[in-house]
Image 1 (cartoon, rainbow, N blue to C red):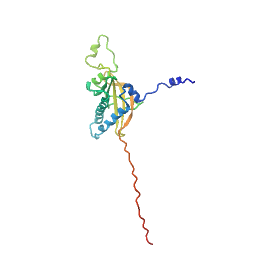
Image 2: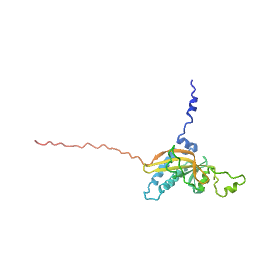
Image 3: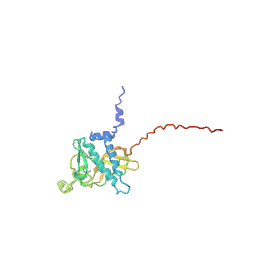
Image 4: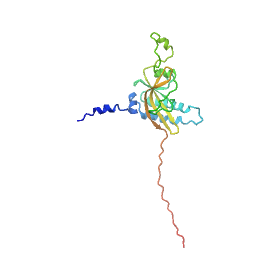
Length: 226
């Protein structure tokens, strides 16, 4: 009998599917659930005319996505929260907090390219997400002086994730990913500890056209008398 165990080692670890990666975070999460949320939010986000204020589409998409995500996960026992003025949904059983963002730029939902770059976030987000530690620790005995009252300590031990979305209005698609940011002390995203790229959602419904057979017309032929 040929021992094939070495083949597994040579091939290396098998890459997990997005569904498997989401299940590792919480068994309640799936690609289908997140795509349903994005597809439901899309019509509300694209209803604005081209004369609407800049950013209207993204603001509406972010707000609608949060509400639909809360609604879907509420049935699994998740709680909604606005602590630190950050609308999010939490599951203490799985130790997870999810917020939504639409400010990641043109590379949201695309693998192998430049990663998303978030705008600078406030202290509320930093307390929920934690900070990346890109700073020099204070000298022993001066911790309280260094921290002051900036409130940058992580609020709790929940793992913080963003459901990032980007609309391609021309193609009628929503690109998204489920990713874990690393922030520095100033609130700037310096990288991502995890990115789960999701398949794009086609938000334009496919229309099926049914062709009904038309009856063959009866044409009477009259010969001319010669």
